[in-house]
Length: 404
Image 1 (cartoon, rainbow, N blue to C red):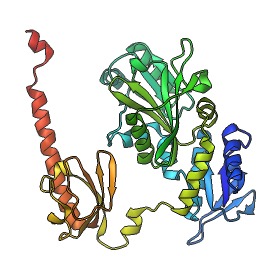
Image 2 (image 1 turned 30 degrees about the horizontal axis):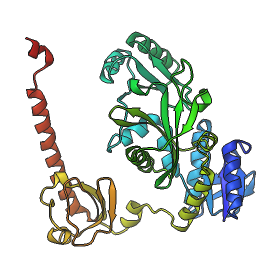
Image 3 (image 1 turned 120 degrees about the vertical axis):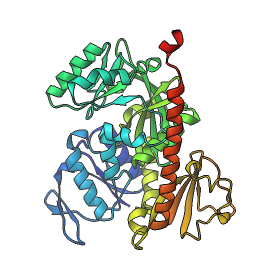
Image 4 (image 1 turned 180 degrees about the horizontal axis):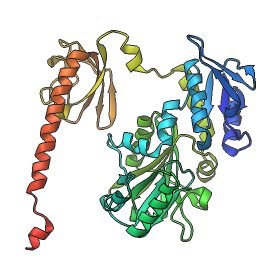
């Protein structure tokens, strides 16, 4: 295969390792500077030029796009995608991961462990936000910081307020996050390739430094992750649309807390700490991706007018619970179940004898009008459940009331 590595740093460790791993597997690999591309947008004929010359055909592209050139890098990646060139990480996935707030917002809709996070703009909202995430000490993060830059530990609410005001005065957007005390000075980096964690390390800060990044002097050592941490890392990468990702997690008392999902993770630290050929695993995944390219089912399947894809939670649809698929009215309603997610494990193309269980999520393709009525039923059930939970909370006496 002919492979392009997009990188402005051809001599950096990660770029050289990826190139060598590709050459070792018999591929024609070129390192191309992302900023030397220009693109032509034309109906049915998207095109790319490199250093003023027409770019020859490539079978695959591996993006190594630095944070400082995200906008232009994403434009180049989208152009490759429009030309049908396979890429391990899509432009959309990279864009989601680069915006820390957006990434957390997306992950928050799923069963992913996250540190309590707040985002405020007004000065008068800062103290309330600090209290909502658990009070001081609190972590303050720049939305576009990398390698530990722009991550600050504020010991008191007043210090946090002063820091946020200073950063906002320079037009910086910042996040507030709960400080996970039990994980102070250390975190986990899980390197996800495809649907598995190929290597993992624990990073430990040195001295009084609370940031464990290797670039800030942190010490790294190989670690075998528990199943829960592996599942969370893989799901976080997949939810954001990344086939290659460095997932940073904190070890909380109640399980993993996803801090960040990096779409261009460095290879030097993880390979040195674990001895794993991570670059080789990335090239192997690229080969699979070229053979079996991903498809945007929502775009492809909705070419049939009135049909599309939707997801339903069985807990909000008791009429389906405990029944085999053949016993439901889904087929009569022109709705086909194409996947069942059960305990985070997919059951693809379930047969008619598959029993629907509580907690299942059904991925369906079918008549949009029929699925709309199902969604309305699901929404009504969800509202009822929320109202019940809210009433239960309102009946619980406050601690002050208990003392009186």
